[in-house]
Image (cartoon, rainbow over all chains, first blue to last red; front, side, top):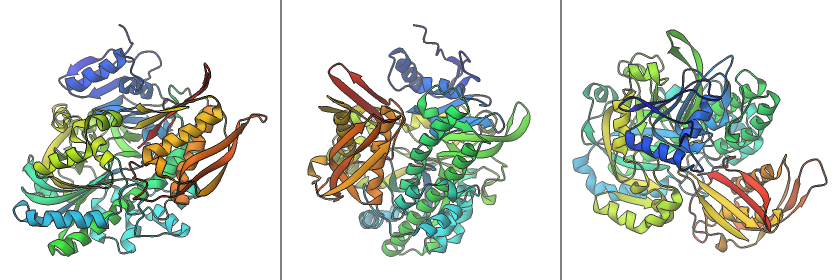
Length: 486
Length: 140
């Protein structure tokens, strides 16, 4: 059957979707053969939601540069695929709400402790229990920091630094957050009153779904030079925090889907799928959205900063550490759109890079990385599943040349939530994980079933494809010991 | 009247089938809260009045669900009962009505998963044989 979506394999983990029809550039997919087979099956079976069709649709947007990318954790999203990257020319290109999604700057913060796996065992239960009580998570949970409308505006402008000023965390954290924890393009006037009001009690909340807080152990160092730069050693206890911009980001996404629908019509932009509504980057609508997205991103930085403070406080109380002994390794988002300099066909120029379920992964030498990490590039934080492993990775020269310096963000779902909830039982998942030494605290047992390790792709396969394609490198594997879920 | 939760790899979907547009929009709202909690445990204690205009029936579904979703943080309310009417006399459809529910109770309502937004993916609102269908994918 000729679907018009025939992939050409150009390397062991790299496929090209050649230009056809309205595509302005080809698609380029970095993935393992099993993932590619699944994507092709979805096309053949005319699956209702289809990541290859989404790559083709992104490739048809005005001003897209070089190729529409999908990374090894690709799966169907809305508009953009999850694991999708699209870079656009600033003059000819568009900014796309679906290239960011509702959870603006959802991402991961990694904290490193001086604790060792050998001595943590008796502390795991009290730490997990205390974190479960301390970090607000799940539907309807409210944060410790209550904000007025003026304070929300200040948070949207200042990002993580705002909550540090309010006593949540350390100034030393800020250089180790992507963009220093603050996107200067933030324009609070572009954010609706409703979005701000929804955030009054949301700062410092984890959320639910795939968001988590994990105590992990460094299981293996895979790149000694980068691990040394990041301060990671074997058997070290670390903490990962996965959450985003909470209700404020969700409302910005909702508001601008509507606003961009009107903008797409106004500017006569042909939209292959409604979730790809967009506006020219330099238009008033495009600039407003970019100002609002930067606010959402700053809100997410502040949210993870606040939770990091709560984690620190817990470790101080239970493990007897000082706050300064718990160091931010890095904090990086995986739903964002930003202007970055990239070299395409030999010419270096600013581009607007959308990453939906993909992290920035700048390789060695870029000034955007913290000074201390510059020789190896900043860390990429890859969330696995609660039963397998997460990874610290880094960017590469090849990734800079061929993937706009982008990296994978997780294992990527293999089963729908509905299928996972039918196949797995929350209580059983918890007891099976306990048997393998992983303790789980969760507000929703159904949520555990939907997030069961078996609902995700094999993270080793996803990481392997990212490494094999040359766009990312592994630095350290992290094993979960305690998992807190909403 | 029927509600079905659709398959989507990353997110969740709602498909409501009913006799009238009003019925499927109400059922979709019940389906939305049914994703998030045990909607049968939500008592009808407090009313929230809704007034929405949108470009099309499909947009009306998105705006209606997004408005109800926002109330979770704005007022703390979650809903289980809906009563609306659609007015088509103007240039665009208009929805007026009430959503009835109570303040979220994290124990009694058995919270499941948080819905982040109402997407346009798979958005479909139309008359079918013997009634109407309304569906959308929500981000979780």
